[in-house]
Image 1 (cartoon, one colour):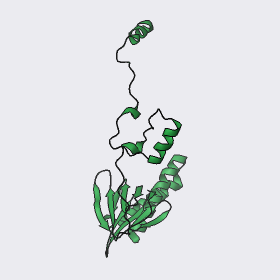
Image 2 (cartoon, helix red, strand yellow; image 1 turned 120 degrees about the vertical axis):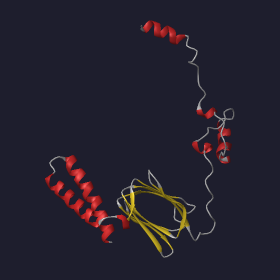
Image 3 (tube, rainbow, N blue to C red; image 1 turned 90 degrees about the vertical axis):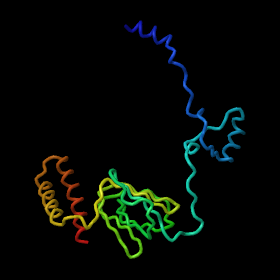
Image 4 (cartoon, rainbow, N blue to C red; image 1 turned 180 degrees about the horizontal axis):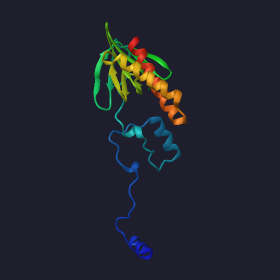
Length: 200
């Protein structure tokens, strides 16, 4: 059987060399002129390599003056809560602590923890409880916030939060394995954050 396979593979026409990805023509080549010049001095007969940025659309320009508003996109796996909404400020529950994001904020990526995400637009403040996710703050005053789960604070039932906190506290005290302890601790952390959000 192996002898036949090697014979068939030896004459297979579908086994021919494929072009490398660097041979694919770039949609919008945007090479760094200084790098290209340095490359030509070292290897004059070889084209400079193409990087992932060669194939990407150019980034939006960074405004020269500080804008008065920032744009927020807040999405969940099943819906889009905010899309292109211009606001004054966003408060994000990052793992490093509460993070206030204003127009002109430095570009940042932050991991989110269970807590309150508040969107401030003048005197109007919309608050959501989020379980986890990431926030991408861009230098052009755009914030993309991706959460696993989110619910407006005014839709949370305080009595169910207290009940869940009591249940997970009891589970933690009766846990025997490390897995049970970890699951109970996560439940306590989430319900404690929920309780803080509701009691405010």
